Each structure stands twice: as structure tokens, then as C-alpha cells.
Image (tube, rainbow, N blue to C red):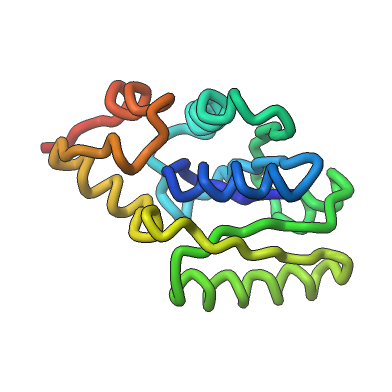
Length: 156
């Protein structure tokens, strides 16, 4: 199982926890994605995910900078779990799932809906609140809240 991740919020932690109950092993793959403009370095993001999942024993975290399909081949993984918050996510993820399966026929994508309480959370929301020193403690795992506050460069 593989979860492609650029930034950790409560919604993604919920998906990871729920997927860990379904699959024997979870690989959380943290992308070096520049397109999504991550707030933190890849090293910091991996560290923050590790801090947030300490209590989940069947999860390991890696970083990657290749196509997801290439990583799945390298790790001999045939299932990708993706979290969905709503209709917009579904359309995007559906196309990504089709593209991935066109590159690797054995690759299945499993979609898990986010918890309703977390469905509004996005990295752009967290980024907007941080920009104005807004409250984010209900949006990100408590284990990494101080890391985020200490490492975010405030521009206001």
C-alpha cells in the first residue's frame, strides 16, 4: 500500500490510520513535489509524518521523487490508497488512478473518503491561516503543531 503525500493534515492522518486497519503494511510515500509548493523541506515533512504515526506499528515513511508507478514497481506494491475529501478530489484522483493503471496494469487504486469532520481541510487552508498566524491546532496532528509553528516562515 502506498499513500502519496505532500503535506500532513488531520485528514491525511485519518486516512493513514484507517488504511492501517485494512492492510498489513502501509508505506507513506512523501513526494518531493514542487508543483504543490510544500511549506517544508522533504526531510522535515518525513520527520513530521514519522512523529505523527508513532503509535501505528504497520506504517513506514519514505520519500520519493519519481513517478508513483515507478516507486510502486521498485517496492513491489500493487495497491495505492488515496484519500478523498469531496467531488473535486474524486475527479482528479480518478484521472490519476486511470493514468497510473495505464502505466502498470496490476496497480489498483483504493479510495477512502475522509472523515466528515476533516473534509474541509486542505494544505492551502493551512497555508492561508499560517500566513496570518491563525489557529491551526484543529487542522494538523498535535505531534507536529510546534514543528509547523517553529519552521514556518511568516511573511506578514
